[in-house]
Amino acid sequence: MINHPAQAISGNPSKGGICFLSQLDDLRQQIDRIDDQLVKLISRRGQLARKIGDEKSRQGKTNHFHVPQRERAILERLRELNKGPFPNSSIESIFRELFSATLALEKPLKIAFLGPETTFSHQAAVRHFGHSCTFNPCGNIETVFSEIELGNSDYGVVPIENSIEGVINLTLDCFVDSPLYICSETRLPIGLFLLSTVADRKKIKKIYSHPQPFAQCRNWLNSNLPGVEQVPASSTAQAAQLAKQNKNTAAIAGELAAEVYGLKTVAKNIQDRAENHTRFLVISKDKAKRTKKNKTSLMFSIADESGSLLKTLQLFAKNKISLSKIQSRPLRNRPWEYLFYVDFIGHVEDKTVERVLKTLGKQTLFLRVLGSYPEQGQP
Image 1 (cartoon, rainbow, N blue to C red):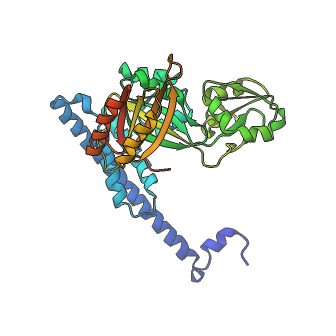
Image 2 (image 1 turned 180 degrees about the horizontal axis):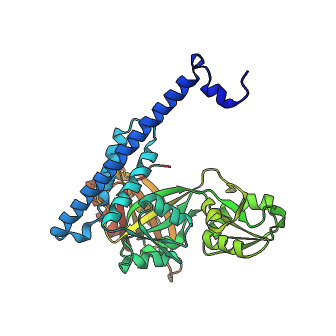
Image 3 (image 1 turned 135 degrees about the vertical axis):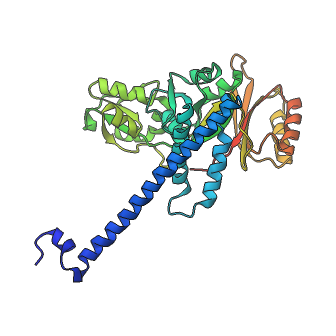
């Protein structure tokens, strides 16, 4: 009779117990040997990267230490090579961390984002650039733009639209006067949590959050916390800080904020739709290089005349250019005049796109191409 679970494992060899342990140990040893090889190969990769950095310095190319098109080419090649069991998204995450750590051997990238730390913008920045960068939290979206323009950061990460609440108009406004370009995009799944120092939902008298999360959880809040005061905060991170400091209050923020600020999770995934994603733009002083699949973003304004917008849209349709987004925005300080933000599939160097943009420049009052950059598939 077996009196202890260990006897079932290490008991009679004829029943396969020792055989099972031996097989398990062998598989683990194989993994250990692979891990040993991986460490050696990663170290070798780092040594080669340093040699490349030395060669760039010798050639006077110190301003070209980061080559994003090289990273994209590597990821495309690895996606084609990947036969599983890991999905391509996992392979990409692993190698983005490797790129980040490799760059840090030479000079870590400095990334500006809408702070403070733990915001969704921060999470998107880490997801896109890896943990080995230097992150520069900014108090507002305008500062993210100015930090790059002043040369204090290499790239910026700014939110542009949410799948529930739509476009972030402030980001569009910043592009009007900025010389920066969109060089990439990334999408982040948004899970919203109700966080507090108290576990009992009935004790919560006030909730802090950014206006966007409040809007994304409107139905849940009306059903579960009707009448509870909602106080806007500059970010979900600030909301978490306020909830930590004030009794009988809560914050709507991401899961990471609970860990960082020492809050209890009162309710999970309270967003009104399960499919809740925010799209972020990566901005830079430099244009992105052409890739296999490209998206172009532009802004334009047109005369307030009957049929002027239809005429503009027909220009894209006649040339079989697929629009993935069009958004109107009132021009600041110019009542009843509108700016249009458009995303379409294609690159500014495509012959058809060149022809359309040339014609569009003649039809519009204002036209600015914000950038052609790699198109990212749906998450």
